[in-house]
Length: 93
Image: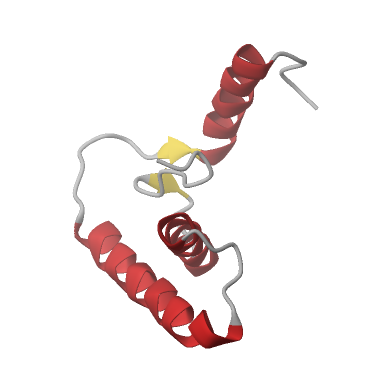
């Protein structure tokens, strides 16, 4: 799947509406093959983004876990380290 779609479940602070919509947008872009749809496809593209975002909200609201919430900063540092290992370069900015 697309590397730019990130896990949104079980974080502290909790996921935001912007993060849910961004993930939905990335998913619809990947599925449709359009980064930006034409005027003819814009309405159906935007409706799909909203549908995916709504389904994502329902999913995230319904998931349960006994694991402690993950820290966003710690996870971001892990991702930077993986990227540095994969592509080379420094692990911090």
